[in-house]
Length: 342
Image 1: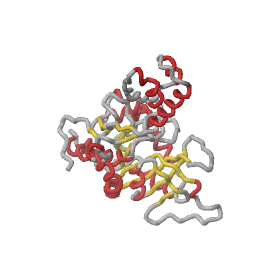
Image 2: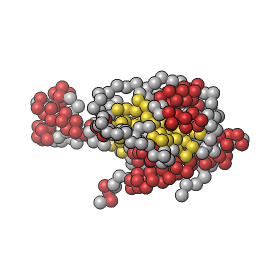
Image 3: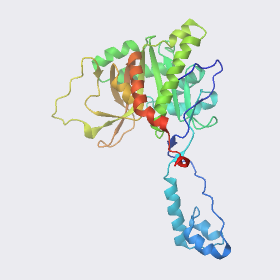
Image 4: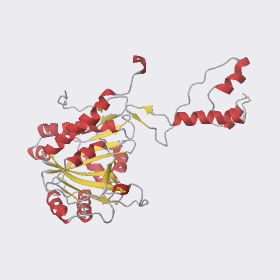
């Protein structure tokens, strides 16, 4: 059961024990080396863990051979590929998160340059609704989620550029006609949701729960009616990272599929691969959607990076979140196995 937050907001921890692979720039601590008796040193060196490099093995006076050093490197290479447990927590955005948030937002338009600094500042300034994902309070964000009312921030340069880019990138005239009115509607909120690629999918359900809880609290707690109304959005505009699978596209002589009457989706000709699990469920329930390609070029037979723009009503978002919880949330609730319980 989720309780109402106190007036003084606290950090928002995620269930501990989520796993992610270490980043390339992270260093693992060397495993402890047990001391051995002098008469067993040769035997211990042949069977024990190797040092970081073969040159260090030779310089510690142990007399290890070059083959021994290679064995040690193989052992270390194996440990580097293993997953490590880290505690991932949710926090309110703050000034020290600016550079991390800006980095996460830079790909919002598929690599197209826009005023991402202004968008990061706005997310930080709107302390009522907004969450950053970090492995510690003093660490840099690896994820950010927020909701910005399209009418309230209509004059923000970043939103002007986002609106213009979406209109010019929409490939379908029918969808474009539906897109333009919602871009300045007070009932529309831009749902910002960006994370690094290697974030575990289990983050999705609690992060969305935290964001939508904050929206509900803001509707009750904001000091003015105008601010409270800015969070009473009826539809969410989402611009999510995704891929198109060219190998799943129909052949050139295939007849194009007609979009269903209820929904207008301009990307029906290619299979969408989602980077974040929640985006798949939002996409299932969206009113309309389209994809547009970014600035990054990849070979034609590889997954094509795109941004998936879609509009999801408040009722549809609730259904999507419930399905997300049913599919992914159970995994997050279970958590990693406790070795001591065996």
